[in-house]
Length: 453
Image (tube, rainbow, N blue to C red; front, side, top):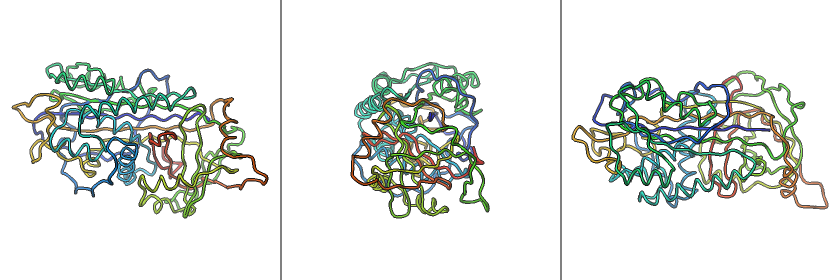
């Protein structure tokens, strides 16, 4: 079975203090037909555009993030789960996001942050507060992606800077963005806003196999835009042991809000897998062929139990669940599905503790003087952060020679028959895609309604 995951994120920076604009909540987004992917996406920074949220009323501060070593996988995953906790409260039944993409573009922005702005960004994202160390960590994370994808998957992360022709970024910022994130600078005339927006969106589309064609919405850039930082992350992989299309059939799916079940095309496979049961639910790990990547699916025992299972979900809880994984025979039923989700995430990031970066008037105001010298017209501040993600799972793919070897290592030779688990995903479940060697989570989401894309 071939699986497609991709995510894109942009940060726009502006000067001065324009009036705030209402922010539409994140939710399902429009996606385009698939094409072959080209290069990886950049991480943009832009000046505050008109028609885009500028200084949105700041929500109450979130509780302090759990302590973790800055720059560690635990710190990155901690941000991922806190961001997902915000995202799952959106109006959309199905949620899918790429926290690694979002953290990457914000880390690139942090290269030029100082004072309180840097303190909040580094604490919320789990970064070091030294720009040189942030760049070094980013380079190591990119090397991990190359290692994790192995020879069996396409996995890319690309970054780019789009700067206004009249705006001069500091050489030190350009050097760190290039060395750590591989981000080149492209100059645009943001006075021709639609042309500039089309350029950024085209770059994103080319790096996400045309699945995310319109990351920047209409009105998101204008003559006040100074810098757009962009990131795109693309993954396409094949299961180590594939599903047989002939076994896929329409079966009931018990959504947690529907009075009666709907139907979903459901795939089936039985055999040796890695799974486990914990109080309240089950966890299953499906590896991708010739990679260090896998999808972990968490299924509550109660058909209406996902809300309770996710209520206290964080990095520590998820890690505890993975410790129940072990070799066994599994009778698996899993829906095939597509979903897309995204939009502005300003308020979510503010709620998590990134507050000064969005402020041009109320102290503490944004300090990005590591990106460009102070401007007498007003500070450079984040006017908007956009994030979109897309996932498609079906039976397509090829059976690899390494599949049996991967499966065989999960169950050692024993005298008795290994236990059999029935893993019937006919009700809402949570899932992640992660690097099984380092534990870093790249994508995450939950599936609750087959009728919602």
